[in-house]
Image (cartoon, rainbow, N blue to C red; front, side, top):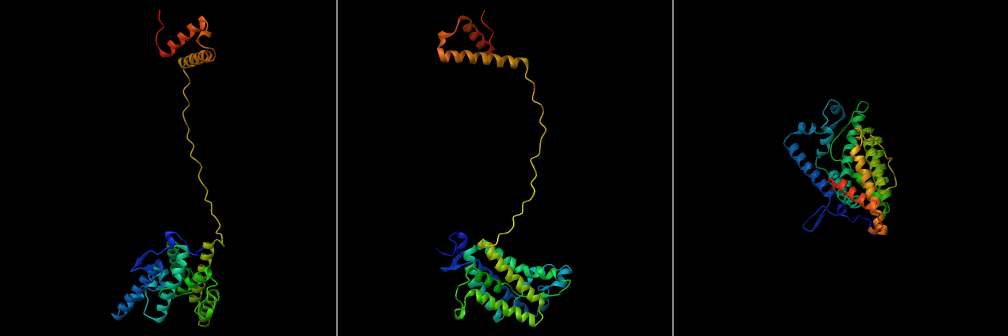
Length: 277
């Protein structure tokens, strides 16, 4: 059995010259375009413009909330950026095949917003800044959680490779006292592991039942009392039913003369025709 899903959600979004294109590719395309735009602005001497787009917790607290959304689009050209894009393509594509396009995009959106939201909350005690795409390492953690026994470089299993990477980056942040970067690293990688476990059904989120309002009661008007005429009609109908029941069981000849006369009268009463003289 394939370890990937078989529905349309788990297949390529489209094809380009026969090559499958996934949502992870679109993420990389957007980020590469932002890198080219960043280089163009830097070349034109627009460093001030880029500075207005990076995340700064103190500035966000002053009302510049857009920085939490634009920080990831300030990407100077670098080898580390290229490696991050390669990781998103390689490992993000495999994660997407398992959880589908929508779940992957939701996962990446949370990764993108998690760090600025966390650092904004910590802003009054820990002023910090962010610039450039984040989330490539967290996507690898998600891959390693789904496929822990996949051999990587030097046949090291993916799960141990993820532990090594996260540990090295955490030690670097600790040695540099880069507390904001450390919190962002632990938050994104921890969320990636948690998200995969939820998708696998190994962690069950508590269900929240909101109180429901009962149906609104309406006061209905009293039913009108039956008129004497309606009661009389009901009695006539009941008498006719009894006579017809006797006919059905024993035949018309079983009726007495008085019953025949009564049946004819009841028929006239129900039809509303005056009796014949």
